[in-house]
Length: 271
Ligand SMILES: [Zn+2]
Image 1 (tube, rainbow, N blue to C red):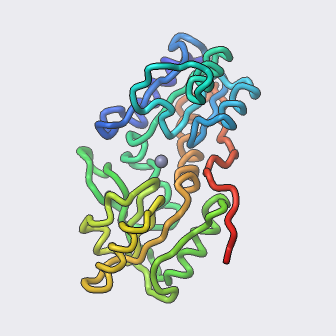
Image 2 (cartoon, rainbow, N blue to C red; image 1 turned 180 degrees about the vertical axis):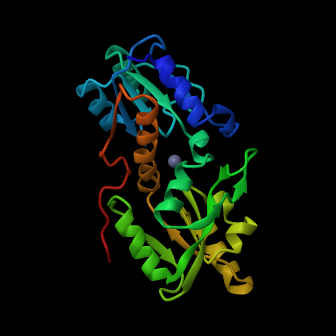
């Protein structure tokens, strides 16, 4: 059976740490690199539900997209939730590994998977990275034009269900051919030329002011409609592709994608 260190060699090849944003903290969070690995649980978030699933299911390693420890900590006391999660993992002998922005930028990364699930062709990054084909976000076009409403419906069918569903800013019947998208929180790219030139921009966590200002700008100078999807749902799609890549590199190890919904919203009241 491979060790955590051998799993890290594979993850570094798939998602090189050099591709991570400067503020990010991907890599091994808990676990002994010399420990052997037979079962790995893939999840977007290392939260109580998924950590319990890993420990109760006798997994040796959790691969999470979001870092549990992103900023400096001075305590892992167990009366705070991160300390409690870290302690639970260590006591259970379960490692925690994260692949975050380094998994966003690569071909077959988080945004790339969403682009290919939507059937985009000629897709390239919104913000190109150092390697060809890599970079943040994706922009591409549909083979056949659709409408904004039908695209939103297709997204709703494609993504795992969440309470907040798919929110749209723009006319239902607007023709759509060119799509820009960013899995995760992508409001930083609202002003990018590749986004402004698209018919629609799909991302998550759009707040009132950035969304309102982008749509107002579209009224005066042309620009994209907006579709806001669940951050968790957008990134969860990537886990199946990541698991398949890991399976082909480490055939002795079982890779399981957690079905637990770690989107924070449980219900909405529609007026
Ligand atoms: Zn994210």
